[in-house]
Image (cartoon, rainbow, N blue to C red; front, side, top):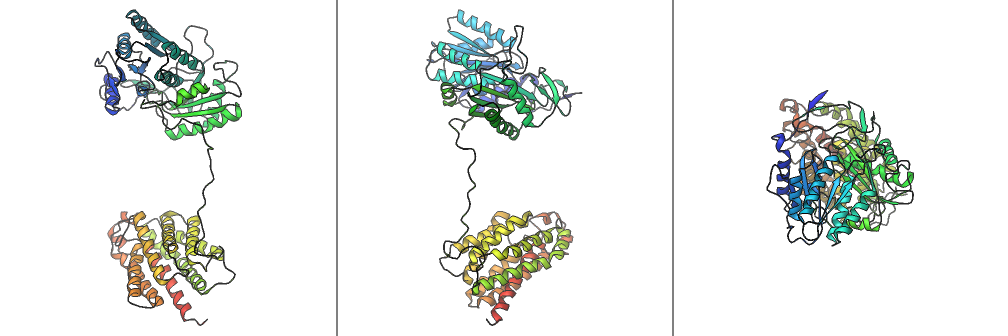
Amino acid sequence: MAFHGKKLINDPNDVVTEFIEGLVETYPGLQYLDGFPQVKVVLRADVSGGTYDKVAIISGGGSGHEPAHAGFVGDGMLTAAICGDVFASPQVDSILAGIRAVTGPSGCLLIVKNYTGDRLNFGLAAEQAKSEGYEVETVIVGDDCALPPPRGIAGRRGLAGTILVHKIAGAAAAAGLSLADVAAEARRASEMVGTMGVALSICTLPGRVTPDRLGPGKMELGLGIHGEPGAAVADLQPVDVIVSHVLKQILSPETNYVPITRGCRVVLMVNGLGATPGMELMIASGKAVPKLQLEHGLAVDRVYTGSFMTSLDMAGFSISVMKADQTILQRLDAATKAPYWPVGVDGNHPPAKIPVPLPPSHSMNSDEPLGRPAQLNEQGQILELAVEAAANAIKKLKDNLNEWDGKVGDGDCGSTMYIGATTVLEDMKNYPLNDATETVNEIGSSIRRAMGGTSGILYVIFCKAAYTRLKSSTQSVVTSKNWAEALEASIAAVSKYGGASAGYRTMLDALIPASTVLQERLKAGDDPVTAFLLSSEAALDGAESTKNMEAQAGRSSYISGDVLASVPDPGAMAAASWYRAAALAVKYKNQTPP
């Protein structure tokens, strides 16, 4: 089967020049030579060939591998990148123009991936530049470990390991080394790195019909970055298996492609081929590191994960492993302004995991140990009755809540609230009921553990906000004023994070009137029990009034007004129910002689 890949492009013939224009507009440290379409060269804006006193580092090749190579132009890495057409080696005149633009008295180093076209065109350009008086050295990178050792002249292909060579050479040049020394470091680095790729799909070229030779459920091992066939086509495997195979191939003592043996220190690069999400690349890196450590006996000093040398929109990744020493690490860690070199990777790793911090769970104002007290004080007795009554009220209302929610939501409000209420009742035997502040916190913990959905998280927020407000009090006993302030703080938190307010047809339409009346009656001098009862009546009225409201939050906001008018908001009714039950329990306790 063949297909056209969907591309966000204009004329397929202009993709490279338009890419360069966008790149230079994005990064002010870059420029390009005004020679389109024949000359496509990106260079550092701060470098002029006639006056540049350091070794210029130049690389390039066919386009379609972005961000390579132009994305790695910058102080401390490449001085210029020569861009060919998609998957086509750049022309000799373009390479020569790049050499002339950035090369000063210290000369230039050409870093070339091992493909016939690149070797020939860069080689001819190098010879022409030398004849013009430029000092030029060339390093060929062939890091491919997928295919058997070649018997002909083609050699190993240049792959993503070339990016590490760019960085090492660029840092050496920035440090002021001579052309010979920079070339020596780059050549040595190229001999220390091995790469192998795995493709899940082939790439689609701009404006061309692409045959899909892989098919569903298949992967290709050792596929080239231009889509050229690899070593084998196999069934897709879990990434664990793929990573193991790739690492064994790179580090195989039979092929001896890289001089890496047990006890060596290495650098790892996991490179996306263009269409692989960052999540999957990180999974591959996370599996590769322990395999290198445990299965191959290697110390992994640096890990680079991302898309460095792609193949247009190919799905898959490559793994590069480079033998490391102090000089290589120093070069890799050196500062660079190349826009696509990863930041935050330098330096030694601290332990990957640290313990999860545990929050302080006990009020600083209380000497009471957590857990149910051996004997409840008066406040503990009242709190126990109120919590028990509120939870039982929710349990009794389960079917009604589900029925109402079935008309305006997903029909599980009652079941969700029932789970929360049941958990609270089960956990009550461990609540520090003599400490009201900590009990509120423990109720929130019970709900968080057991109660799902939006209702669950909103009630956890409700309890946490109340706990924070109560904890700020310096009094040893929670007063009615403290409770009123805690309710107000809880409502504010639910509104802030849930986005609803009065009139949105939510639980707040029961709680806001309750809070308003509670504060008004307390300020008017009513005794706390009476104020609590009157506020609970306001909660019931508020919940009932939701029948006349247009929903503006939650799933109810998708329901027609006619349906909404037939039922109250289940969340508001649940809130009013437990609030009213708690108030009646407090009244009962207040009327019962000790």
